[in-house]
Amino acid sequence: MESIKNAQLGGFESTFSRRNFLTGAAALTAVASVPKAFGQQPTGAPRGTVWLYISTYTPNGKGIYLCQLDLHTGKLEVLRPVAPALPASGTTPSTASPSTIALDPTRTHLYAGNEYGPPGAVTAYSIDRFTGNLSLMNGQPTAGAPAHVSVDQRGRYLFSAEYSGGWFEVFPILVGGSLGPAVFQQQDLDHVGPTTATNAPPGSFAISAHEGPNGHPHQMETDPSNQWVVGTDAGQDRIYVWKLTTGATPPLTPAATPFVNAPPGDGPRHFAFHPNGVWMYSIQEEASTIMFWHFNPATGALSAQEIIPSVPPGFTGTDFTSEIRVSADGNFVYGANRLSDTIGVFSVGRDGTLTQISHASTLGDYPRIFTIDPSGRFIVCGNQRADNVTTFRVNPGQGNPSQDHGDEEHGPGSLTFTGDYTPVGSPSGMVFLI
Image (cartoon, rainbow, N blue to C red; front, side, top):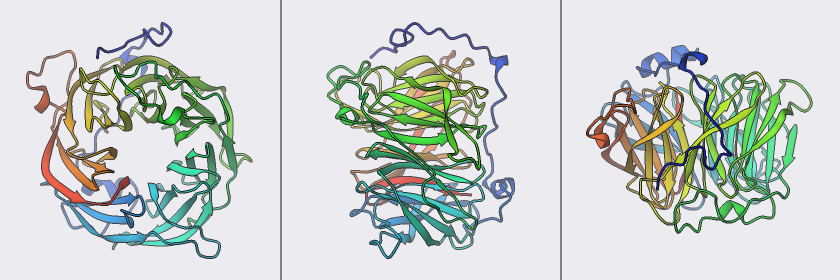
């Protein structure tokens, strides 16, 4: 399938220049320096390793697990469960199916979205940085079923995008780290896009988020400036933007342009910002595409610039995308494809546009989540239906889409399987403790 540039964007033209953007953040080169950068004491992870929390769907998964990644070999080991899936007790909702997890900026608290129901729940845990153990603090019921949670960069709010039920919600993080009742709610009613995606691969029958009758929020997170909150609704084919005002009631108000539209039926699922804070990339679940957006930190405005396939060249049939990540150095974008069971590797051009340079099989079934370790050396991928996690080495180098690397499958930014499979039931969320 050929790249689609401008044809399905209503004639948008890119007017970017490298000098117009902030300098990208440098990649983290040594995990030992990370705790100091965050004002934290080092964790209890042995030297040369880093800890990773993996959350799971009930019943195959049993809650949240503490794992350990060897930064030399890429071997991932499950150490133990640290937050079991528990039934409701008193005022604390059930902690079953922690589908997604997030850390606060101090890395002393972990928050989970419990995707059951609706209603579902969000839960708060304190972290023992020496042992990696989690202690349940409290939980709050949610109007919908959380598919994604995140924390703002000041650690004041937990954002919850709730696919089933169609809600965006915001919960205050109280002194000490526990959660208060929701202080912002938006339910996405009607305006669901068509069941045929504008840019789907030939022969695709992917319709999941467009079954209606209401929207299906899938991610809610701040921009790098922490002034705005962005939220994707895969069913409505919309990306919402709100102004964040800490301490206000409510803390979110719509931006001057409250939402932008993705192509009908394409289903924007997740997004990731480039380190420069003004390039944003969204991955569309039904279309199996990646869209490049220009984000204006002064107004919160988004403008579409490019759309390209996320699947390997020539792919036909049904695929559902999942996660998208940008490397810490800003040189590469990675996007996961479920059913294709691949991670696409894209080089970032000088104007922010993308070129697919390779793809790697996840060697599992239905890759729901993947993340990049803090050193940038490895990508860890959770294969939901295979009940396993696979680990890949990130081949070093900056990459340049204007040059022919010759061996693209082993060139800069490409992924090489370490040979390491780790058994985890229905993996759904991942965060490294640094």
